[in-house]
Image (cartoon, rainbow, N blue to C red; front, side, top):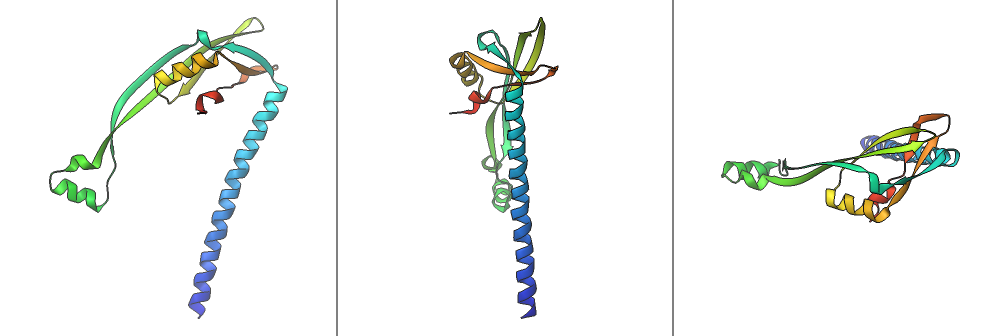
Length: 151
């Protein structure tokens, strides 16, 4: 009977720790979102023409081990190790922007992991976006590229 109480207590403690951990993570995301929204309200808005961006892309195939359990060992043993590996397409893009602001140029580099064709299409469809700049510090800015990650 005492073991049952101890096991129940440990399970309850682990459950509560997990709930508190998830709550802290959600609170962090909410705080960061609120901080970004406050920055957007206080910052100066600069319209950015996306037709003048420079895009550098790098795409490659990568072999990824997909089965490293016991059955993967059996596959390797019988000469079918290829069943444990999958080819994955990787894409790394960097968008380069030069935005005029109060007689100076703000240079921005924005990294995106997306198919280059899809990225180019989304940039062409959107045509323009907003750069939020802290009027007291040009280095503190936020480029609104959320449209890239919407379906």
